[in-house]
Image (cartoon, rainbow, N blue to C red):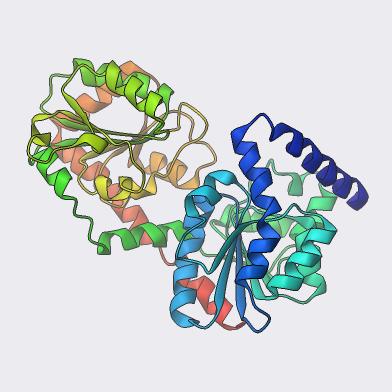
Length: 411
């Protein structure tokens, strides 16, 4: 099976290089990996002490960040190396000050794994959530480099728990310790004879709880809201926007609206703006003297959404009608109701908070309109729903403290 896996990886890499000629995202995936070893060699010197963290994309980076920040504070002489699998994470965070070196993870071949570890020589390897790469894990074990998996979550249908999943089970067992999000994941690991497991929860809860301690003030938001109720829709896709635009154009309520689309390409933003009949303004064109006269603000920039959520009375998080739900914890931490689309299975925090009725899913335009009416007409319902969300984060934070206690025994 190992031979077949390695053959598949090599064939996939060849195929991706061809596809890169026609697809911009795959081009980034390929070209970035061609530069990875050069960047790694330039960033890591022979005498450096290195901590390596590998993440799939942006969401996993956010999960790993509380650990990275604590490592920075406690081990200032160590270098932090972060590798990404996906362009959507790497391209956003390649210049992040959180790490000393940020690169794509070279493809999972025996040669790449050996070369990578020859250069990086990490004292510990930290994988986030579900990144399982057999050749890297085998080489880490061979070199006796402690390797842990954090914020992991395991589902019944995953290959590790199938009769034909022996090869991936073998790779999974290479970790020295597993920090999982829930007891169900622990039980599933126990069922395949993996017992070195701690249930610590999701490090993202630590990450978002820290947001409350930051300065979230935005002068343009104060000028825009004018102390009126504010509805913020973040990371929206066209499927979300079709529902939101219809509501915004027809709603009579005295409410301020902010739309922060997932895609901020100029043609998409102009199309969105053109579909809204109420007085609107783009963030790139705001004038703080007149912005308060507008009813709708369209955010055509990145990096602002978290702070904008702090001004929201109601939040909508996109992706639940499209490719996958975005981060619901960022608005939830501010103690406000959160609305999502119907497809949230597999997102534990959303599943938990839907069950507790802090996050509320909608099915279509009608259910969205009815829910908005209930939230706006009933301030007690709005407050109670928001408190459920804030309470969930407060109750479940603390994973980083437990993970760091283990890491200290290794460094």
